[in-house]
Length: 231
Image (cartoon, rainbow, N blue to C red; front, side):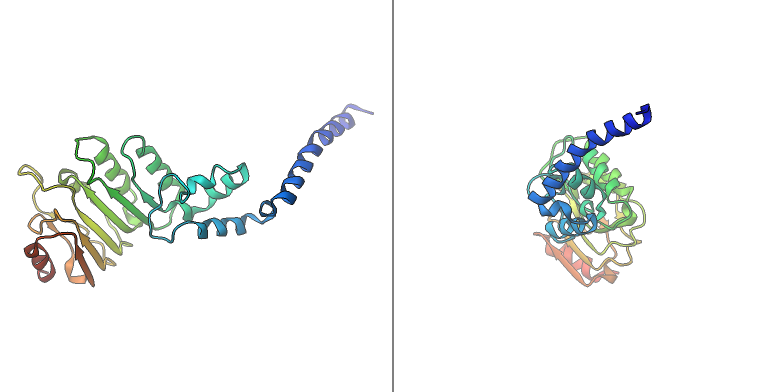
C-alpha cells in the first residue's frame, strides 16, 4: 500500500464516525434532514409577524435560533428576514448589536424601534444609535423614534420606503435646542403618524398633507389641530 492509499484510508476511517453521528442525529431529530430552504421558512414563521420588532434575546429572538446547533446558526444567519425588525432594549453594549442586525438584514426594508424615553441621562451613545440607523434610512419602512430633542436634527436623508412613523422627543425641548425642523420631507409613502406626548408642532414639521392616519399619546389638542390642518 502506497502513502496515498494509506492517507485515503485514514481519512475515510476518520470521517466514518462523523457520518454515522450525523445519520443518527437525523434519525433522532428528523428536522435536521430538512433542506435549508424549508428550515429558513420555518424560522421566518416562528417569529412575530413583521413589522413587530423582535427582542434581542429570549424565546422570540432570532438569537435563540443561533444557539441550537451549528447548522441552525448558519441557516439563521443567512435568513435575512429574521434581522430586519430591530428594537433597542438596553443602551449599553447594544450599539454593536444594532450594527450587526443591520448588516445581517442586508437590503431588506426595516422596522426600527429607537425608543429612549426611559433613558433621561446624557449619553454619547444616544446620537450614535440614531446616526447608525440614519445611515440605513433609505430602508426604513416602519420606525419609532423617541429620544432627547437635541439629537433629532440628525434625522437627515431620503426615506422612500417609510410608511408608518411614531415620532417625538423623549422630554420637552429646552430653550437652547435646535430651531424648527422639517423632517421626512422625502417620505412620499408615509401615511400613518403617531405623535408622542412631548411633540410640539411649533418645533417639528412633518408632511401632513399626505397622511391618512394621525394619532397621538396625550398630545395637546392645539398641536394636533395645527398639525392636521396646516399644509
